[in-house]
Amino acid sequence: MMQLLEKTRRFLWLFVELGFLTILASILLYLILGDNSGVFITSVADNVKKFATDVPTPSLIGIGVIVAIIYLVMQRLR
Image 1 (tube, rainbow, N blue to C red):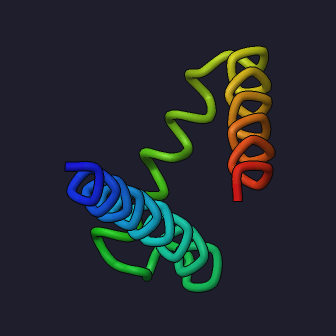
Image 2: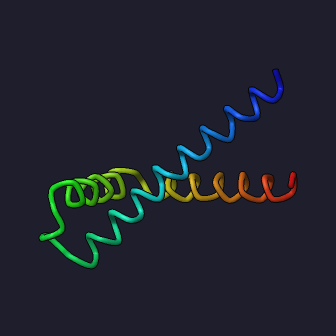
């Protein structure tokens, strides 16, 4: 049972990393190519811009702190 949970956790974490890398690659392509980068890349960039402007700054700082804490805890557990 524990092996199944561990395998599922790894699979889900891989899925999250893949999604995050897709977003980062889309933003990079948008920065390089500009408005000529295509519909998908432009829509991802627009969504990231909307998210960044709609979320208040203290919330973004809080999310960053939480991510940093999770990262540090994960490094300690290894």
